[in-house]
Length: 578
Image (cartoon, rainbow, N blue to C red; front, side):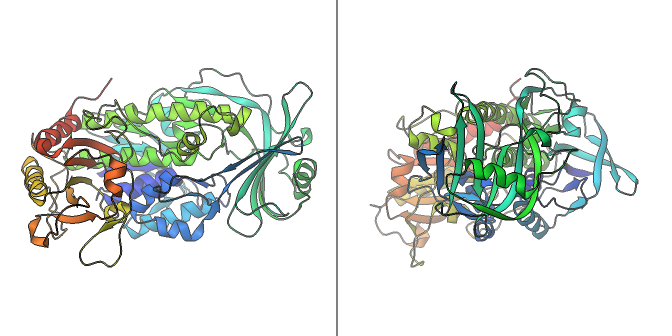
């Protein structure tokens, strides 16, 4: 029996497998395609995704392959209406980037391979059934051979036409825009500024948009992914059905689906639209591929049932505006994977898996609604202030406050609270290193929970570290040498004091006295720049639990460490919301 069967090896399925393997969970990853598709479908990489990849140790490879996204130029009827500069607060470690989906998949697959995993290509899911103890799946390879696989859990990352979603009987509510669009990967010879996307539209006399061109920079000199409305002679599909409830067995157009039938757009078709709408004269060349697609927007009624779950496009599809889809799916995968790992290892009760839907479906609903508004009216029409708008597009505001795992709030009202993203910060130092570190540097490579203890007095930190270790069951806390003990046996009921394998790190306040290394029982860093205290809004000695997906699990006064960690444990083992 395998622990988890992951169906679909796109960015979401690869991310799920990567996180499961990082947590030492046995999984199989299958995909019906014989090879990766060479299409630049999803291209935008959000800062929050880069933070997640940083903790995995993947960010450097992505940064070396990606292109910078600096902003967007918005034109209406040939005149520049606005210029959006993608400038985030200085404490955010990453900006916006562009990377073709085939490159993203290649890097993720290489990462999975490095962890001992593999993509079983040419292997599709035919059917599955589940019972109290697991899932029985039937797989079929390209030569027609069928195999019955037994898994504890099944995760469907198999796209908008998901077999998993359909066989699970989930509804897929939403609709589709009536217009069809062309998509092409081309090189443009023009004098627009480097790193800026372009949205150029034409308004009819009644104020409606009757023509639009969107260009997103890609790696490579002058290369863009361009989308625009399709001319009648290239239309391939009938008018879109009205919005409404759609059963799990019906296929609809998807945001980045390749057209099935009809002639693919030629370079001359794309050039015609560019000549009509581009704000500067441009000559196109070197088209790699093109397609026709329709924008759909749908979301499932629940993200899983029993031992089977869906993530990414299998759970939600929406307009490509703002590059939210793939990034949202990757966060789905990371949210689910660490919870599956704890349950499989016996470190948490199966009820924990119900928090996946409780946390992620509201995010999916918000993203679908927002991207539909942006597709219809443009991102620059949002009423949010520019800072909030960018932080939301960067997915840095995704949080789970008030959710089933978000404990009691503590500290200033404007401080990061349980459920929020754990902010990165700079200026952390040690006595040995001649350079400062970011918090992401310290968290990198640690797959489990991390307890951060902040104070000015070493004695307070030592007491809180002892309380943390006492709250955890023996054999689950990393020692000062960084070596993890063996996890619990799969499916063993968690003890009331069991804490998932974790790291305990101390952060000394800037004003703390010089501290010899043996004064602390755990690794310690000094907040030399005061950035940790500023961004975490510490109000005296404070502790934090950072979840494996980079969200805060708890915030508490150091004097209440044992009670706070016990409360977080109770949340991990509590009955799931219905």
